[in-house]
Length: 305
Image (cartoon, rainbow, N blue to C red; front, side, top):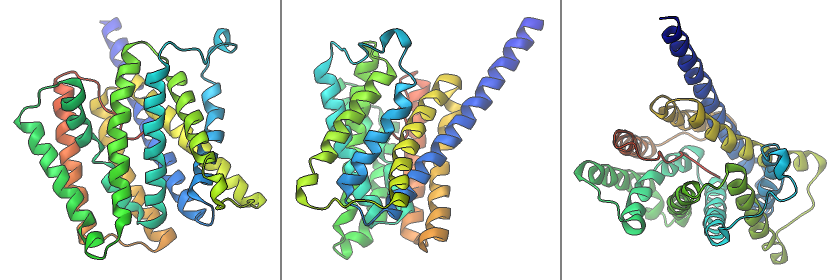
């Protein structure tokens, strides 16, 4: 009886800690989004380079000491390349979206990532999808259209960028599943993603948009990298510690943070289109999450960037 009580207490503690990690992850992602908007004077490629370069710092603390000399070795170069390349495109796209759209709009549309994961799972993994998840996919698409309709009416093509991000998100999720199945460690996947993203951002240097940052702005660029990397690591840790059914719903706090930060820092007031579309997307991703949890399939991480 004592052992059962001790095990129950340990599970509760792990669930609580996992929940805290998820909340902190969402908060750090939200703070990174704010800093990306604040540093609007700097080229997106320069900010992306900073995110990737300084994001390497937390990753190195995860590498086992006995692997420090050869941690970068892998048998799956092509898989890492595809995951990193698609992830870099997704990162660039959402950075552009954050610069030109409201925080709540971008955050809401980013929730539609699991919809594309379902579709990509059909196309590339041969999975069979039943009616419930098709309904979820349909609701998610309607939500995206509701949010972006005003943008298309006004020819605001920046609404395309969050969609590009969600497509990239889906591709990244598929490649991460494959890399995980072959036993690649989290730190190695994150390392190659950061390295590829830094190179991707560096390629924008010749186009003349980069400028020398002030000491204060340089500190902000460093924080973008640290916040993004820490958020990803906390996200992974959350799923390792706690039951996904308890932690995953906490990801929707990012919409709350986006509305609060957007209102107080950028005078952004969500429209009825944004709130209605966000509601449909949240319902859609929640249905997909519950269904995949029932089928005991790998749960797609809410955001990796």
